[in-house]
Length: 102
Image 1 (cartoon, rainbow, N blue to C red):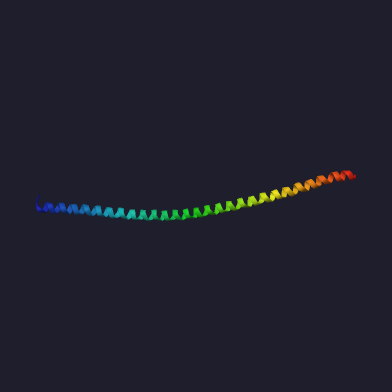
Image 2: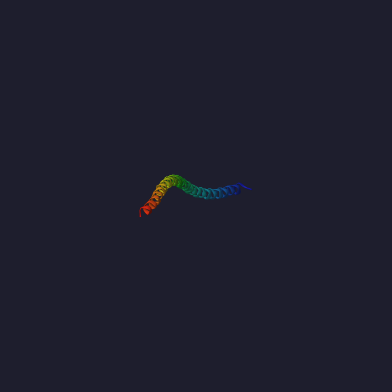
């Protein structure tokens, strides 16, 4: 192999390497863009997850409050039932008295 052939071989290799470098630069740029998009998606997902956690906590707190109110209403209902039973008992006691006077 003479000097000119060696030189041509080196020039061909340089040209091929230059083309490969340009292709790799393009691939790298595309991967950077993809990476930025993925990072933005992850950030957005994190925000949504945080919002979901806050919503969940709010729903749990609301559920607990409704349970507490339900228990209070049951207690009030028991009290009202007791009063109603007493009133019915007194009314029943009055009827025999009314029948005796008639």
